[in-house]
Image (spheres, helix red, strand yellow):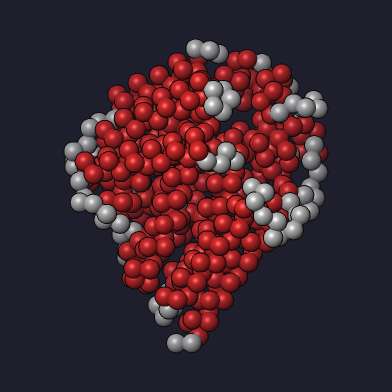
Length: 450
């Protein structure tokens, strides 16, 4: 596979560049509209939602969790994709019930400058972590961390993706997402057919790790079911796509993206379950799959991860540009400034890859925990339509969530043991219960005292 994977990158890059029309107007670069001012179609929105959420990190996480914790690990990660359904409800209320044109304008209306500052900080960190995580997956596919192949692959994909993203912004991202999703489905379908005809799908996969509520897999499933209420609101890529089309198209795009994404994650995660159920002592997931499936299925697996990573990177960069230029208004709203922002976020992601933490799931867990400060915002201020919640309640919920996210990071990385010797996912469950409980208490108390 010395030349096959680079060939995949080149092929995807060339087609993506050909599809990326240069955008010189803000409506196309930041809002995804065509040159004639048309909003994206339903199929474009659905495929864009799916391919930007089943990114390389997610696919690999679903497989790794399946490898260690059986079907329950994969289902735990799949549960995060219920975010499409809660996200649809959030967009429905922010945009069509309350009449705001973005999450930021809603938060500014309710909590002033503090509302947008806290939110923008959280989603800025999330966007940077997405760039980091997907570049990291590319590196892992090509070699050991620090090797020449690892470094060159990451830099090559970063440069290529940045080039066509800067060309057309969100409009280019939507067009390339459509192609990349079709390519991903074709590759994944062929891979799954090869695995199925190889006789690897058996009922033994379910009993490989029996359900036990005290085990990491089921515990992580509970964590996901708690975090999906706020997770979509802190994901700017998903939220951006909720403000592009009409009401019916938007609602249907979220519904279809939800079930398609969940199927893709379960399908890819099942490969990790197969590896875990058949692994020989001392084998990691990649070694077990290579022995079980052979060279060409593993090439398809790697190709699907590359396609997914490149798709997510361009969407993340376009959302980064919109965040700083249109939402935060850090610079004048011009296409040139949007391109500069994209370059900055790509450099930040590269810096994290070569200098930062290499745990793929930690980025999900930390950002998911931080996002839970939004639970009381959604329950009280958005769905409950409360306008009397004081700013201090909002800030207190934010501080609690950030403290919990930092604590989880130090606990899971071994820098602290304040929560004892329990498994890191058990600690994550405790924090995922505590953060929204304290946040809701602050909102209840703040509203009561007025």
